[in-house]
Picture 1 (cartoon, rainbow, N blue to C red):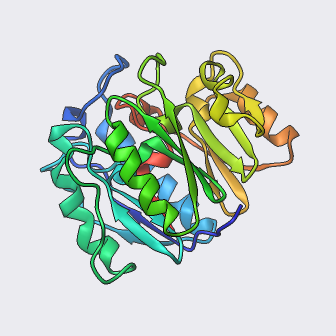
Picture 2: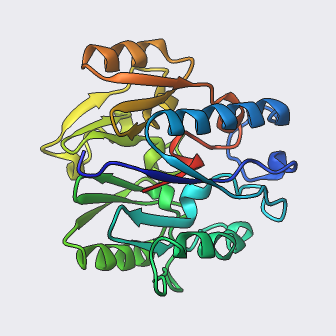
Length: 261
């Protein structure tokens, strides 16, 4: 991968985590188990070279553990604040702004109205960025982000996922394993934006496992998806297998729980 991560911003779930937004019907999350899973995730980040910056749980925003959606960070270059598409999440950006600004002074740029952007809709593969047009991220938000990325010599293309069933954000269905290799669900595999990339199809029935995360020399992948684990290992990857059951109930995945840079 182009960059190595040395730091990560995380925020544990608040006690009202179960009051957050979700489009799935998997039951209410067990809060104690969610806390343990978050601790395990954080330990894996540390184990793989990331210094943690842990924010206090924020019960003003039940979804605030999903810090990835609030900003996009280019290691050693810059960061831009997002503008979440769900009104209930708008305050999360201001709640994290000062922490992000510690690393990317002076004043942080941000997505402006009428653009909306959840950074979970942004999948980077080296210096190219795929931006999902979703029910949370609109074309204007994608345009603003692409313009900002271009100032760093990065390119971008859009992927409309509004009619793709079963995924909330683009990275629910595609993630970069390497600069030129993507793991992808079947519903996105034929999209022209991914032409020329080495595509690794997620086995049928294990679509949730597409939201994996490359953290330096390993791939973080959700527990419970043995075919995907075997496939990734056969390609030579070392895995960190992490239980994500309680976050799946709230439309969350591995990438959602940290801002890595």
